[in-house]
Image (cartoon, rainbow, N blue to C red; front, side, top):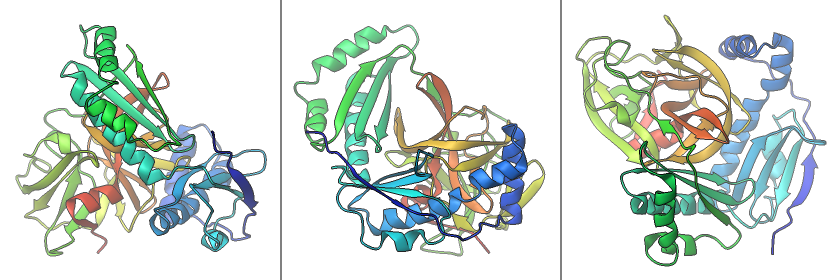
Length: 380
């Protein structure tokens, strides 16, 4: 039986959102790249990051029941927040700084953490069974409670052949076990496709790192005297910064939590990051990616571009936990570069994948990078 969510709307506060100088710069850049006037862009997008901060707090505080959140204007709301059961009784107090109509959806029957974990389990089981000639991309949709797994193949290998092999594993083995462990309220779809594409943005030589772009300045959480830089895990462990051999590889992760690594620096590490060619700003907070918010990225190849977050918790081959934007704007060499808004660090660039017939950029959320590698954002 399909759960029918209960819905109510919390009316907007009267708090006025005043962008910081850094956010105003990003709003101007976003407006220019999307052919919008600045006043409309500020009115439409400036409040969304306040909503994202509220969502980040709710996700952490009510992890066992938080299900979903997004910005998507409807007939009587500007954004929504969903819960597997009843909403917290103090939900309105978490939204006092959000000047928007927020729809509260209750009793969905699934929570984000359980659905995302089930999606990872199915993704890696299918990836292992599909073999080295296959490509696997998984989309856990926390809005509808659906896990969609697309199975394709490398060039020259018939997608149907790979799909037939996967279908043969659905009755028994690791794939069947992962499917059987999926929460009852969650729907699972596995399909074969010849339109599956994805990859990483790595080139060799030039730019801020040997083969990629540096991310954000960090310090080790257990020894804050150790400072360095993040980048993407697939970039390789040997990196020079601006042709200077000052970086020492410390640790990396390429798997269920994303695509990340960090290097300690023998030179001083400032608390700033490049947000465009030749100009820097301070990194002050860790952002919480939320579908519908505006974000920008800087890469040594394509420079500064802006887009909106499309979906979270995406899987592409060995990488899971990635955020995905609406369009592909990055290029080879941009991997590891910062995704940001204002002075908030949102993520580390990690290639792209094709979903719903469009190629889209992907990044590992900063919070996952810090938790997985034991880091803190360097803000001073």
